[in-house]
View 1 (spheres, rainbow, N blue to C red):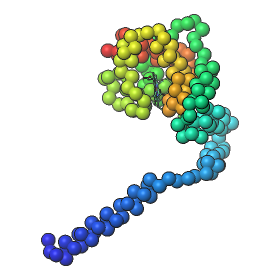
View 2: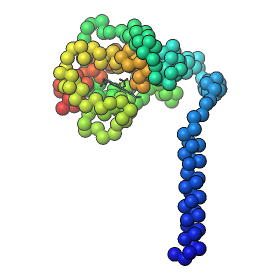
View 3: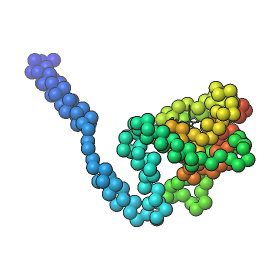
View 4: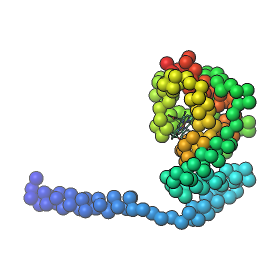
Length: 211
Ligand code: HEC
């Protein structure tokens, strides 16, 4: 390399190094956006939707609290959320929690439902694989939630664990305040039988989750 080229290369490198901190600070600098601007934007985007859809973008009291604290809720608010959400859980009238794991497997794998392109009468799935590993043989899964492999086996198939897991799937916020997991039963995404089938997927010793 000639001296002049070397100098040019050095200058370029120096330029890059001085440019980098700018790029980094531009990305990490806290941006304060007025929540009212965000709300107005969302309303203008969804403004022509049906009243049913408009109702879905209105956060309830629990979500408002979670938003206010960016999900880092102080313990008094967390307790209030868990108490309020627990009151919304409807346990099976027949006292039975376990359905059919084969049906549960299909529900866990189904990401349909709640979309504007759905045909009328579309039955929603749980889309559990979007966030969780379940069967070891399935290689495509998200990692936002913990792995659920061996879920029932690890909990010794204990009845109180089964009940807590029903609560979790029915209304995640009744177990963990400001959970990122959807409130499947409370928000009527899944019905009672579907939740029972998912519980069987997690708790039946014959389910591939526990193999
Ligand atoms: C959008 C992501 C998301 C989806 C979809 C989701 N979960 Fe979760 N789930 C989470 C997160 C995050 C946690 C951990 C935090 C918490 O407990 O709320 C969790 C926790 C759990 C737990 C408790 C795990 C433990 O070790 O205590 C169970 C059981 C569970 N999920 C089951 C399901 C099932 C069944 C489905 C499908 C019907 C599902 N989840 C769909 C995000 C998700």
